[in-house]
Image 1: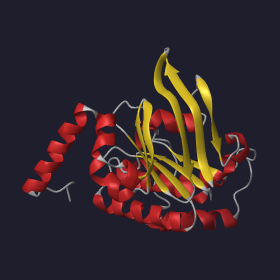
Image 2 (image 1 turned 120 degrees about the vertical axis):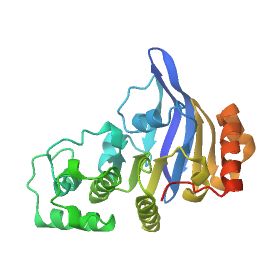
Image 3 (image 1 turned 90 degrees about the vertical axis):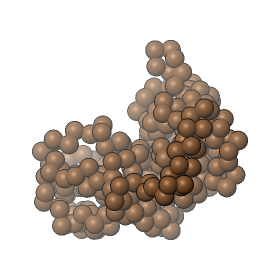
Image 4 (image 1 turned 180 degrees about the horizontal axis):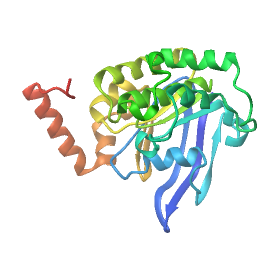
Length: 256
């Protein structure tokens, strides 16, 4: 079954294409990475899928339907930097937002809703912070809360923009375990990711992007030097050199 289909998808800013003629079909029940160099259109692709930016041409289908017909089955986690974290709300308040439906924004929150929100917070190891103001949390903790809000929605398709940015190793490990559990439950997770060093270990399926789509498919077919070179060009040489140096000197990939 196909979770997301795009056909001839083009997005332009000031008449300059940011995405050009994107065609792909993504399977359900996979953890899918969207990777490419900076400025390649990764975030714009997610926003186009979610209907948050106007498209110049083409279409997007989700579960073979228009987004508005299946919106309750789709959950979106934006980049942490795009959120106003000074908003006066507690952790529980944020997660409960996942329980509101588009056509019922003023419904009364029930005990069942609160139980679902608490369960979502427990899955990301943040239940003990439920009464804490969101602005008082670290970046990694804020990211976990946003993922908990997404989980509380009970969606089938989860679209996440750079969930590993600015998180510590423990949070990264917790997020990876959570994504794996979601996959086991038959959920589909689409993740924008920037780190080639870890992409091969994180994902089942890859969309390789650089304004146009370079390739899309199972990780073992797509993650090779030829296609990566096509997407990254000279930048890949620098990345390879950094990777070789880290391996040679036994540097840690991240700070502990």
